[in-house]
Length: 186
Image 1: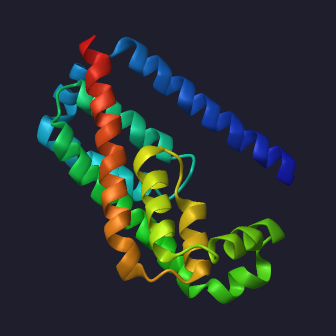
Image 2: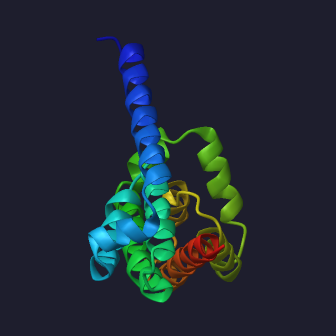
């Protein structure tokens, strides 16, 4: 099978999976899902989805959809934020350390735009970068993969990044869960 055909199959299966999820959520309410999974298990499921789902830009969407569903189904918003935020923190930490230890390879293979971003970030103070990291992670449900790689390339110390990464991860999950709670109360 050619590379192009394989890409089409991947896109086809991804779209079929998303369509199946949309159909399931059209006929099953969040309350039924939480009742089936169990309220206590929703926290474990959200943690596992964050750890494994956060490793990719594509699967991150399923994590946030599950958080909205669980919070709309009656799970505690704060507990979802704590467990989901911890899962995102672990996932992003894995990305950071993979990039940290592969920094020499990344610098050789990185595209010029990535190196341009790194050179721009090196001009800012550590405090400004950390505030930007918190705003990006805490207020956007976008994937953090590229950010973690860039921070590793810049040489950001993990002990300075970890509290900001944890706070931002908890914040974004809390906001998404609260949004889900509000939507399903309407």
